[in-house]
Every structure is written in structure tokens, then in C-alpha cells.
Image (cartoon, rainbow, N blue to C red; front, side, top):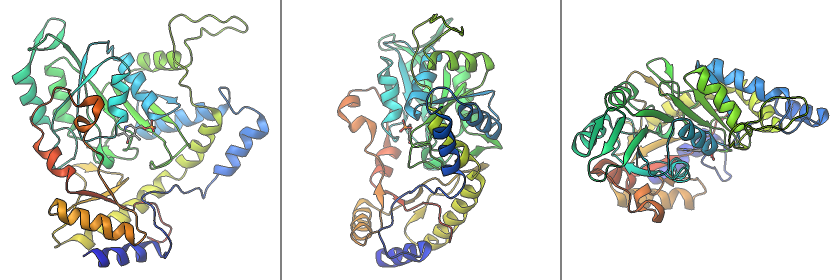
Length: 381
Ligand SMILES: *Cc1c(COP(=O)(O)O)cnc(C)c1O
């Protein structure tokens, strides 16, 4: 298997060089638009590309309002702030995620509570969430609390792992029942749809990331998707220092953030958005080639969940056991083909080791068996 996989991937990419996990592709108007910002001198907080980029994302996702931010973590931070997450609150999320999900809520003074994922989505499991709440939570007129210490549970934050949508209908329904705000960490899922609706637009807030390794990149950048225009305009206001517009006065009507995406980065984003549908087509082709390669093997290709369209941002397989995973990591990386295990689970990190959690058998098991495969868009695939 291991040698066959290496040559299969080398064939896909027609390369004998090092093959990275995910490299950006700049083959459209990137240089043209970035040069235009430099020539105009409007590289920073003023300029037309930010508005244009926000409009493009709003149209593509169908959100009420999209607000560009300096990175995906800042978009999550703003979402939590607007959701009213306060110091001392709890926010339910999954242990299998990139650390940014937990960092954002940590810096709001909140504590994560970890609930298991399911194998079909690799994302927060609705059944595990419902069971956790039944056992550990109670509601009264103003919200949801942990029974054991009265800590307020403010929000639920699923993450669409590698671009595979979480079970959003079930999760929204549970959130409604328990008076919890649904915030989607859609950092990895631009171009992924749940029953025809774009991920990040089903909850009250969604956060996208345009970091260098994501499906499109702005160098660094993010986007907050708001379900209401009211939240959208508030988001725009607080991410831009809460300055009240005036030709010369500096008056700020609340403590704001400086989270605005620079025009320079937005220019890159506008050019990348022109290429998104091509990227999505190529990624799907690549995924189907991996799927065929692993069919009838002991390695399970992670396919898109039912009724969903995934962006196949990072392809993943589940190995039969930890030993075969370690051997595959060793032989592919030795051969110059980059593969990677999934992130260390959040409750294994020092900052979150004492966080409250439900039983996590699926996360623990998958964390030992999952591997990500090279997934860059290739002109040849
Ligand atoms: C990339 C990513 C983020 C945000 O990352 P930034 O680097 O801040 O843009 C957040 N959550 C997840 C799951 C991610 O993969």
C-alpha cells in the first residue's frame, strides 16, 4: 500500500519533487489586483477591494452580510463577542479541531466543553450533544446552564472538518430547544454546502478563513458571515474600532477591535474568488481519484456526508489502526510526499486539559487513525 500510494500521488501531481499537503495557486488576476492596490497607495484600511471581496463572498454563500477580518480567528472572536459570550461562560465545541476554535473562546474568557464527533461528518455529533445536554444542562427563562456549577452555556460551535459539513439541521434544532446560539467554524469549508445551503450560513454566525493553506487565500484573512443585517452592521462597526463616521472627528461609541482586512489582502481575495469554482471542480476530481484508489482497501476514504457537497479541502483517510497510520506517515514523508496526522485533540493540550467533556470515543479513535493526503489543486488532476 505505502509504495503504491507514493507512486499514485506522484502520478497525480506529475512530480518527482517534494509534494506539499496544500499549496496555493495564483494563476489568475492575483498579481494584477495586488499591483493595483500598490499603485493606488490604498493598501491598508481604505480601498475598494474590501467591499468587493465582502460582496463576492456574500453572493457566493448567500449570507445576509459578510464582514472581512484579518484572519479566521478574528472572525470567530467577533462572532463570540456578538453572540454575547461573556467571561465565565461555557461554549460547547468538538475536541477534534484546529486550536483556533478554542483560542477564540479562551480569549473571550469562556471555557470550552468538549462533545464527541461522529464518523460520518468528523464534526460535532448531534446525538452526543443531545445526550450531554440532557445529562448535564438545565434551562430556565433566560438560558441554558450547567447543572453542576450553574455556569452559563451560551453557544455551540461545530467545525466543518476538512470541509465536510456537520449535521446542521439536527444541531440547529438542538440549539433552539436549549436556547443556545449556533456559531459555525466554517474556516475550512468555503464551497461546502449542507442540503444546498452554504456552510456558515445556517447558524447565527459563521467564520471563514483565508489563511495560506485554505481553499482560497488572502495571505491571512477571514470573513464573518452574519445571518442578520443588524449583526452584520454591528460586526462591521466593532471590527473597525467602532468609529462613528465623520469627516474629521474621532469618536468611538464602544470598545472596538482592529480586525479589518487590509485592502492589499482583499485584492488577493477578489482574484482568488474568481477561481473558486475551478478549484472546487479540480478538488472534487482529485478526491474521486483518491476514493477510487482506496476502494476495496483496508483504508477508508473520508467521503462527503449524505445530502452534502464538500469542498474536499483536505483529503483524508482512516487507517485500520495506529500502527498502519504511523507506517504510512513514515514512508510517505520519507519519500517526499507530505502527509499528516490530524491535530492533537484539544483536551490533550495544556490549556484545555481540565475542560469539561462528555465521552469522546470517536474523537479518540479517529485521532489515532486519520491521515491527511496532499490536496493542492493541480492543473493536471
Ligand atoms: C484555519 C482555521 C481557523 C482560522 O485560522 P486563521 O489562521 O486565524 O485564519 C479556525 N478554525 C479552523 C478549524 C481552521 O482550520
